[in-house]
Length: 338
Image 1 (cartoon, helix red, strand yellow):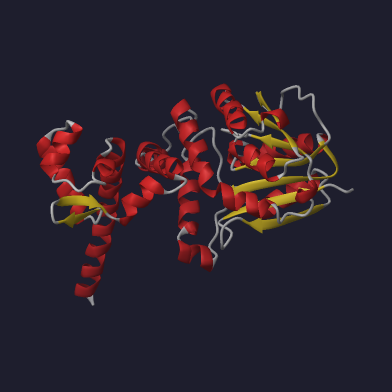
Image 2: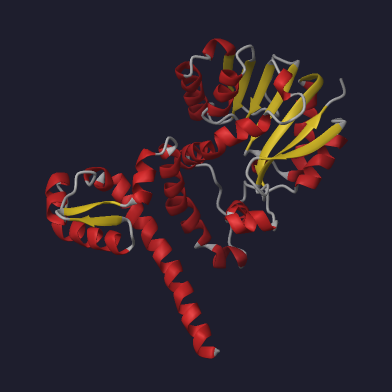
């Protein structure tokens, strides 16, 4: 038994180490255009010549990528295997690349500081411009699923005036306006640079006549508009301290019309079996841990506590709608009396 345990342990350790290496191999291949160049089968030396890179390092990268299953041998060289091709060609490829960058540049360095943080080291602040941009890009991975799930919330299909708090790059607001041709929307974004990107998103989606973006803090800004039918908070609840959520929900209620709905999309720490089998439960747990490593971010919210806070703020009806199977990401919603 001890020998079997050692073998299993060694295999698990090898998978862990391979995972870290594969992340570096993938990011290098995407950033330097190596996978793209290998759409036409090439040897390592031909690849180095084509890209103008160090031949010995390119040869070592090709060898490692092949042995990790990221490249496939052909009669005259190498081509990308199915996974890198998917990263190149998927409709959401920009978000997938941002997710790889987020893991390598944000998550792993921060989680590497866990021993010191657990001993009481000062937690760093989150919010550099590149971090905010990567996070906004990654949030698009679930966009189509989230917009479909949003339609299953009572009252949403009748919404004609929409408020998107923490709108990021504006893609959710643009997506909603494209699906609801008679709707108008206002997006609120704290980061001025992201707010400007959101304005460009509305223009590119050809919905700018029905949408506006305001830069500022929703809790303190003078918002001229009210009477919204729907308020959206997409993957932004962890920016609000638990003690501030009651004020947030009251302010949302003040700007909603009778029968208005607030829809909060959030990842959730869950142990549900479907989420565990799909791996989404582990992903949410990782995200929760990452959030708590920062002094200006907060852990993933408890859906039960969110629903209670919504009712305390005057939302008479509450409920939940899963975005992914198992509910590791879901909408928690509240609706005012008509």
